Image (cartoon, rainbow, N blue to C red):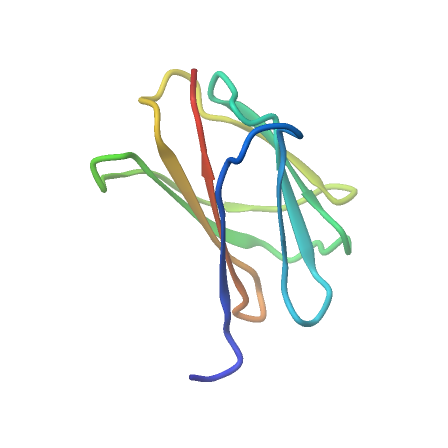
Amino acid sequence: MGGDTTYIAERHGPPATNTQEDKNTQQYTLYPNPNAGNLILLQKIADTQPVATEIWDAMGRNINKQNLTFTGGSYNLQLGRIAPGVLIQMRDSIGRSFEFKFVVE
């Protein structure tokens, strides 16, 4: 199956964050969850290489696709008004995959 592993985080109540880590110690945290379409993504290990990001709504439609470049290990993602039930899929420059489910209120 190769070296890529996908991790899925789900909301289970407080604390209102999702954190995903791969075997090579890269870790991402998404907060707040739930949010109003504006969220913050954090990297444990700061990496200036772009992270390919796709955002999917609850109906399975791709509503946003972009490359994120983290500054100082963080990125403020402003999605604006989107429907509840959203999934973010991220793939970093070395092919590691991360997925986050989050709630939009």
